[in-house]
Length: 395
Image 1 (cartoon, rainbow, N blue to C red):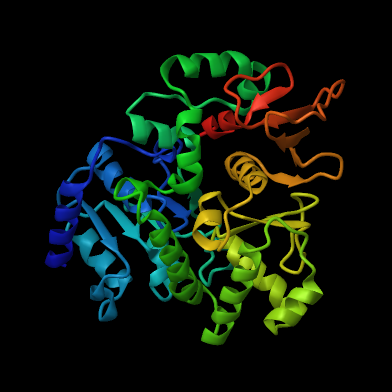
Image 2 (cartoon, one colour):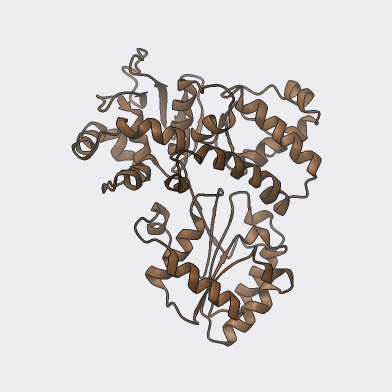
């Protein structure tokens, strides 16, 4: 246990406080059991350590541990927690919980047995509390950490202070918002870089090797995170890799389940399940006719890669600009509300419909109160025409 404290002190002393993710301001830390899930590389560990620096005592009352630490090959989390509480521990921060077998059951027992302990844990985006062995859904308050928004990327890349806008503000006052942003920064100067390598904070380490690292991160999610939470064989993982390769070369497309099943050599139901696994890992994004009642056996109307950087990391050819635009729009808006398939226009979000295109787009939704055209390559829109980059300011 002393070694765990030593590692914790070393990590918290090294954490940078120059930039904090949007989610830090959204979490209600008054809850006693809080979970943060997200894709690999989103910044969950940094968020935990920054929370310690900002709000918790950095002494024996607080402990940060990663559950993939070798300590847990011979020791149980529940035993560590009991000892920690007896020594005055009050704040337990657990990283990578999905890497620890039986994590949900032990967390449930710890929560019930230690009423004076506050627990903050992180895990893969694939975890579902209502399907875990220990039902934490009635106990834990869950949040998801998205990748960087375009606004967050600009803050990191330029050092400028840029505030997020609400959904209603964007739709009703986008012209004035864009004009104010342009006084401080030219967003289109940075937009193409963000679309290629700006979704995860590790672009700061090196933009040159970002795409290679992103591809490696996807590989680790499939080979480590997925088996940690689902009983899945190595052969099935290889089938998923083949399916991802097919998708990356074809997106966006309407999936023909029979043909995909034949190409990958798996049954229809298994194929749909594989698609849902990749959605949970935030690798692909399925577009459904409705946000309600999405079942494990329902196929999406269209399939996209989860964010634009993946087009550059996984596809062998130069990505289509139209695909990149649509992927960006879906990704940024989905952080706030579901984006669904629209037969009339490209997408629906709430009561609104959107058509995505370049600045030459001509099919304007004139006379349709809740319809908008979203234009690329323009700084400022007009009436129902909104610049694409501005949807990156929603969080």
